[in-house]
Amino acid sequence: MYQVTTLETCRFGLDGGAMFGVVPKPLWERVYAKADERNRIPMAARCLLLQGNGKTILVDTGNSTEMPPKLLDIYGIDFSEYSLKGALALQGIRPEDVTDVILTHLHFDHSGGAVIHGEPAFPNARYYVQKHHLEWARNPSVKDRASFESYMYEPLAVHGVLELLDGPGTLFDGVDLELFHGHTPFMQSVIIQTTDGTLFYPADLFPTAAHIPVAYGMAYDNQPLVTVQEKQTIHSRIIDENWTIVFEHDAFVSHARLRMGPKGPIIVTVDNA
Image (cartoon, rainbow, N blue to C red; front, side):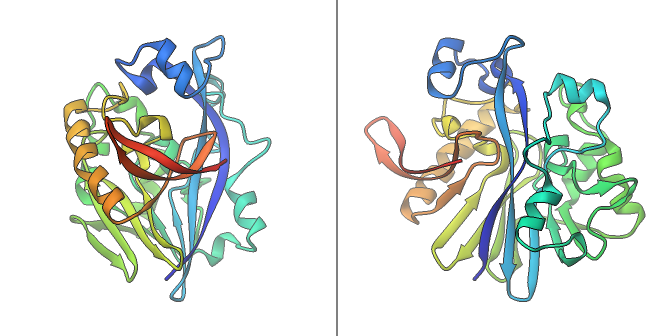
């Protein structure tokens, strides 16, 4: 069993239309947030800290403090209130204390804090990503190549600390991985056993609570219909096994549980960010 702490690592903004795809703007503004003058909506970069079984595990690393000023501006990345290093320090954790880092996928807003100054940011940790996802990141499509920044993860391979996984399953006792492919190939979501029940960290399968409905998908998804199928499949397991979802990007809701309503899953308990 693990003690799990959510870590707020920055705030940033993404285009609301890109985040909600075919959903009309009046609808997503009603269920999530009003867009700013550049059509961006507020996003969190919420990582997880797992402590237990002799391990200190980080799940995802948020955005990079080393992104070029142009990209910091485009995405409105703001470290003034939150940072990964600061969030860990509040828990009494130094970078060298981290034993393992699970990267759900290698998009810049998930892997950005894994490397600093060309070196692993957590010098004593092993880093875990799916082998076939790394292959995709190294040869992405025209659609998603802007989401990958090789300086955020290639140094991990150079330094010999990157563990390449081949499929779903148990990574550590009480920590399991499930694979999803609609958003990006071989994204690994994390299922954690805690003293308070099961936590599900879906990464970009459900980036926010507003993305729980099947039809509310992202234009960023490589295979939108696959995302639909994956949501439909996992919804029943979340409800039947009473999982708590931790939303990585929701600036307003950090945790929620679901029940099945007449038109599909609905949120019944919420922890506000």
